[in-house]
Length: 286
Length: 285
Image (cartoon, each protein chain N blue to C red):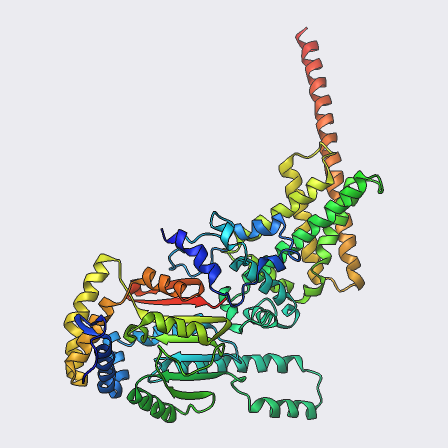
């Protein structure tokens, strides 16, 4: 009964900070990846809290009336995006979030909506980067379909995709090791792993299915390994424009390709050996 | 007195009118003011300090925050706020100095000068209480403990705050909302004086659902506390009121709904000690 009473009540009360969505919709492309991120809530909030009651979600059935105002999640989204600007100075912390809230005209206390270690800020950033990568790859695919660009061979495609994704870290590279350590905290692992695997799957999806040397899980594991190791190398890299990192990446991708060839060679050699043994057995039995 | 009989309200387990309730509560705190802190320590065995520390930690205020502490009486929350903000500020300054490795002596000297007079980073706390006696005790404590900067004391009613709209970053009410006669008005006032994005925090006794703990808690409340009240403060009745008012106060979910009704978003609560105490938090979005 309470649920039904709420939507009209909310719409009537002039919200202090939630903006009318009609202004927002033109600017905010909520892609599927960012929605996915908010569906896997960071489980780290105070463990003794009772779960929130059945208030209507702003995309649920009460959605019709409350469509006029942006939801809390959208506002949080905006605050985190604004906070990214302050990360180089303050790191991935509640202070950066507080500064971000200030630029939106909100009180610094709004940073209290998020965990004090900056987890949400980092996850938000990763999710945004993944969305940007998806867009890039999609655009490229369209160009290929229109025939304007040649389709890249798999190894070059993978190299370019991973490089494009890693380059997004460059403005924040100084504080990125801190972010990585926070992403590895037990309570953040489900979310961060989820984001990582969906990004890897995305890349393979756009790379197209050509080689039959790998099966699906091996492909995922191989590319994840390449991505993670390259990321770590990038943290230590001091060469101009990270050229050492890109060379490392090139080598790893090449390794992965030859490994695939080796695997198929082993398989065909194996088949030949088996046939030889069969022949010998038949001969002996005669 | 000739006061019109208002709506029926509860004063502990008694039923009184609104006006009577306000008067009685005023008298309760007038008489307990001087022994307030001592009683808090003995009743809760000092645990109230931990609860207040947890509240401050949850708030995690950054320097520059403006706090309004309502029903702040003897200043416990205000002093903690000042300590917290001071240490955060110190850390900030240390970090800044670490970055300034290549400055000349002149520049370093100047940066010290600038920050010396800003040890709180422009943070301020306003302590508001309806009871003159409680404020008096609070001011004396502040003097005694050496708190002067960033602190002000205002006489005011939580149901009708003497402040303009959109003033404060954080509004706290610790163990005070139970004594407010019209809680809905207090929540509306809280909403009004907070800036957009501002936070409402309420620390209050609440309901224990665990049956075993509940029985022990009831035993302790009704048998031990009024006796302590008589022995230490010479005032059995006030502490009887205290214990009864805790039982009459709405439980966690109900208070959460009331806070949402006042217009706050992202309202949540955290139980401390099985629900003996709960911290409710909401944002003005």
